[in-house]
Image (cartoon, rainbow, N blue to C red; front, top):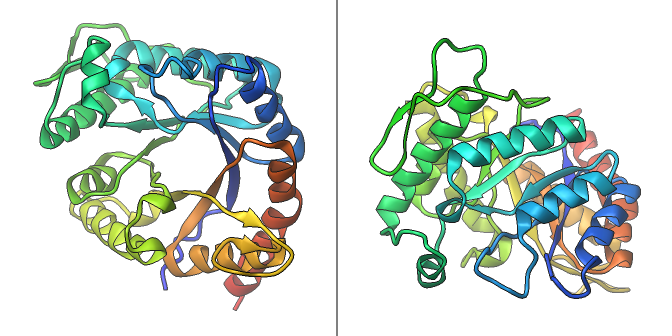
Length: 299
């Protein structure tokens, strides 16, 4: 049993489809009005069927009022970290502190290269991501003396002025599955953001993810509880229960409460591209899950 004690968050993982043009933004508005905590969009800059995710995040921020927004996850190989840091800080200020940074090391290298990016090996991409995170944090660190100083192998940002400062402490959540990436999360990130559907062993694989993060955090002198465990999920509402996240809302709440209490997951982001599913998730599943977890935590 691993419960890191974080408050529970619930969000939507919305496809940034370019047609109909306003579909993704309207679903973010639905999620905002329904009371969800997060609206997120995948980021594949080489995919012409999708809107550019950064542009979409900016437009959605202007159309929403309280919900936080994030890439899920932004493609670092095609988004240089210093300009990205300033873009994030600017949108965070403009939105009233509602932007988070979900980021990844890349993975589809042929289209990344076709868009002008550099092909990296798995090990190189992890090292580049760690350097990129350092650049981003230094740009935001307006209270530190002197300019940004990152002399990395993949990113050299030397002498750049710091700022602007974000309106709040932007969280950096990393899409990660394998040991080297998970160790990076433990050392340098605020959260891990895998997708349940990509875990070969299902939810049981979360135990291994936690172990790698916790060990790396401890080695770096960090409290493992400082790292939020987020999870992209999918499911189907049905009158009767058939399988995990396949049944009525009450069963969903029990399934998610189990993930929270057993594996420490504290943010559940549902892949959904229709308003009724998003609204039901917010109205029925989120409060019931919070209640179940709160009851267990009081014992």
